[in-house]
Length: 186
Image (cartoon, rainbow, N blue to C red; front, side, top):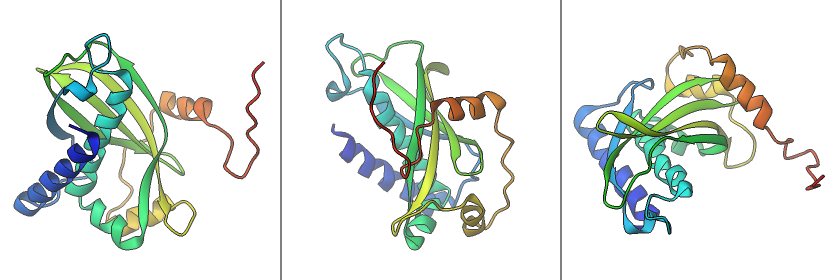
């Protein structure tokens, strides 16, 4: 099944959950069950490494909808983008294998929010990804986190960002979109 159909199905299911059970707390662990499909598999007959990031997007959509953030950002003309990500693989997912995508907001710095995603089988982590994301305005510019928290109607009560995450963000950053970034190989 193509990821666009999975995304639409995930958003629909999350909206149903939101209507039935109300909003979940922003610090909740979101869990969705998925299965490794033939379109996810590479020539080595396990899930392609690039597909994990696409499927972890499903976890972010689920959290956005079920926390009520989706409606808030849609009303204001905001949208989330991934600024950077890093994934670690532990075990391979095989064709037709069921697994759970676990997603959780982890913290923030002055511009970005940080999320962790995991591919979990029977309680065991198969892969884990750290994502640094920002919210942008459709008219241009970054949404300040103070404005984001205010729109959500909640204080900034996230735990402080772990030092290694801040170091990773700094080490993996590219120049601003307004600064030159020539591709020069040495």
